[in-house]
Image 1 (cartoon, helix red, strand yellow):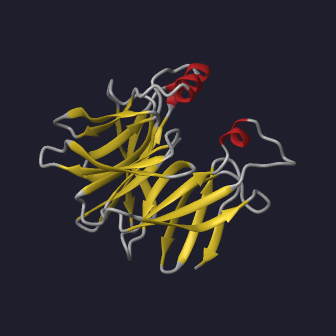
Image 2 (cartoon, one colour; image 1 turned 90 degrees about the horizontal axis):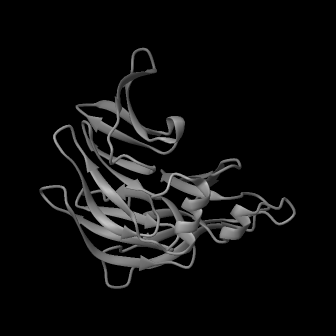
Length: 241
């Protein structure tokens, strides 16, 4: 399985999970049953545009944006297209009534999340080392407002529920991820982006490590002054801010 997203509707919690059966992509929808404290599988979503899905952000019942992070299905060719800068990947919108591509021109569209006011979508382009800020229109199309350039590979994005800041799990060294050396492991980095819509967003380091404690950080989530950092293949780290 891949990334996931939550949706709340009428006090009901739904879980959307990206799945990759047989090298294809589906989105699995679950409902959390409070009394039984269990997840009930509701639906499997398949569509020809749901190819190479990396991440999703849920907007409502069976409504979500999803990122496609590579075009080719071959592992070698997918790596090649990223490193030579082909901008073939995209963001799509899904609902039971309509499925469409709403933004393109990404080298590798990766993490995606939505602002607290549900007016903007943030998309990480991992190989381009940047975050795209996009406005949501009434028809669910997206318009690119700005690009925030970073000096690191940006993986998954979350939102600080108290401030609306973006938290980005990042990889400071791509080659150390691709060619793993336990004596020189890949490091971890979590960035906080404040004042996202301003002319000069403020970028600060929330966490950084050379790999001695945490390797390959891919996502970070904060709640009530607590930070949880997840990784691609290593452990998770729980921090008090």
